[in-house]
Image (cartoon, rainbow, N blue to C red; front, side):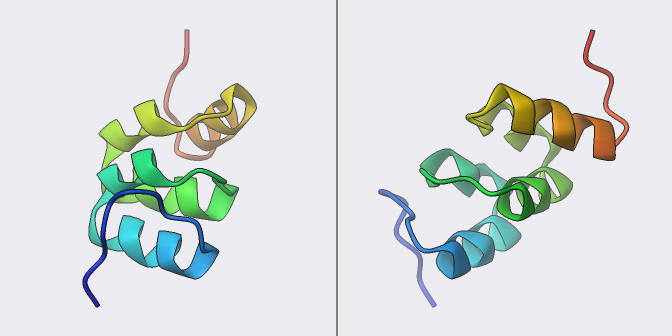
Length: 68
C-alpha cells in the first residue's frame, strides 16, 4: 500500500502510515493516543508533531521522556 502524505484522515490508514514512518504523524489531523504513541515509538522525534499538549504530556509520560 502506497501512502500519500497530504492529509491522513482514516484512523486505520494513519496507524499504518506511522508504523512505516513515525514522521507521518505530521499529516494526521485527528490524532488519537494510539496513533501518536505508535509514531513516537517508531521515531522519538515524531513527538514534535503531536498537536495536543495534553496528548504530548501523556505520551512523554508513558515513554518516560522528561518534559521540564
